[in-house]
Length: 520
Image (cartoon, rainbow, N blue to C red; front, side, top):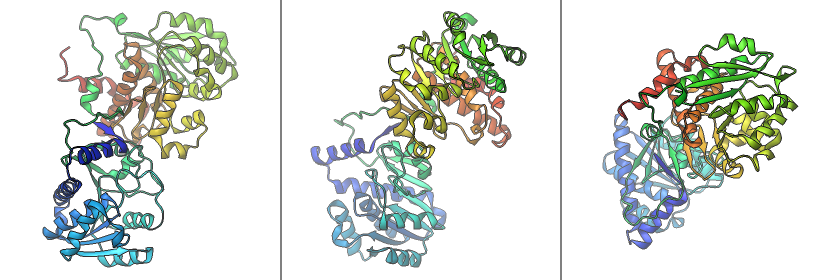
């Protein structure tokens, strides 16, 4: 699903009004009526309950005034609380406010927090309509509006958000200090980035996109390329697979992983690569743990590397370069441990690496200490897959700062460093250097367990080895990884899900995706 920024949808709205002459009140009437229909459909079991509409002073409030009129006509007990004085409401919103005022509907103009609490309590709402802020909000909410959001979230009532939950930045998903937690959000024309990206996505609840009559003909194209992934979009990424192919035709991945106490990470990555559809996988690991890896691995090959104090170091450079000469992709990082020798090795590899590469886990922790080495590196695609803690080390930001603005931070990092940045977590973000962003829609809390990231690394590495471009491999890998977790959850729930539970579900998820797309 295509997502747009707040500025893009506002530009389309202005074009319809200013250039095409479509009256703004017509669009507002359309928006309010369609929202009312969705409200009726969703909350019919509550009819004719008490409904409180909390409206701001702008056009979002105007949509709320239309809803007040339409819902009152249909028999709902509607009270409208306007956050501001009557003479502060102008333009199209003022027109709609004047109509409900003349109809004698119950309206209260709220000037202070005390009055807000009193009127809200007196109305005893079973349902609340949030019409305070629209998608244009990008600064922190304060004062009366902040208190209104707190009252909404603290009420024992279902919440309907008009266009976007108030307090969510429509262009990033950032929470502007405080945001409404809605059960249902109805948005206009296109879903916004704030609906798809965390933490804003969780505030939206169930999301419905509706057409309010903004003309498509002659509309300027959106400049952003952001998608909330759906099955159809991901299906198109599946690599071709010949029925007469052999293992040498489906790519050979090299995995650099493992150290004392962390052999499981190497095994999970190698096993996931095998499950990706990759033809051959070699797991190269320090000599100190090679025998353990060789026992644990079955389908993947293993290779012993010169080590230093049990860890891979710069001494293994020649071996690794020789291995890479016959491989199509590299996965680096799971369970490698930390040492100064590993930092030097990463610097050398990044400068001259001849194949597409994915770096995760300990590889990222070492890279954070020499981030400057990303400048002037080889022109091969480079995928970084941090979780929020690793992203904090890469950027110098705190984890809370990362989590509060995931979309913008990921997009900016990818552009600045020329990498494909995969920021893990709920609604994982895949950002390309050219500004493209995909937001994943699969997965569950079962992935919050040790080793699931190692599986993802091997899976994406295997897709790279099969010839996929970096952005597509990262996108498909994340989607399949999440879908595999969903399949495991269907069988056993999420509590106690282990990373190894994902492995047999990876090819099933891929086949599930491929069905009906092409015959093999």
